[in-house]
Length: 150
Image (cartoon, rainbow, N blue to C red; front, top):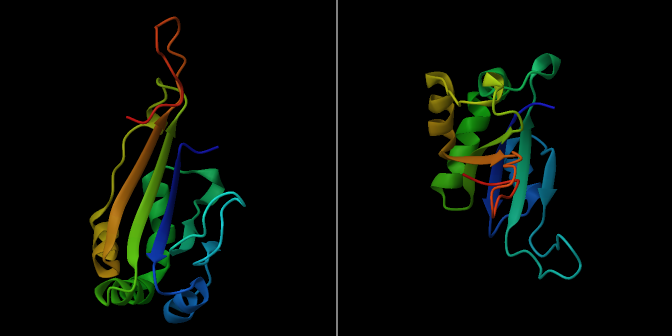
């Protein structure tokens, strides 16, 4: 499993995923509707979520390996995302999830984003959200826990 995942997440308090898909001209890999529940005991969601995941060839998964997938979605998608954000109908995020399981593996560390990806994010009016999880056995240290979020 790769140490990194990357995806675009659209969150809206007024648009259902089907409307977001129609406006963007593409279907999500995952979505949740306003009023749906993640678990039966939780209250209904006050917002919808629309997610499109970036995949890397041959199972590679460093951010620079995932960038071509995002850029391959094209400027039309970025512009359509930007219109949703500019209209105040949705918030757009480029999500990067990093999981470090081997502290000595340099492939699991560091995040570098190209100017082209930053430009795509600008057109999409996307905020960058980076979630980092370090899975490390801290030994006998009191209070040591895994996973942790730096």
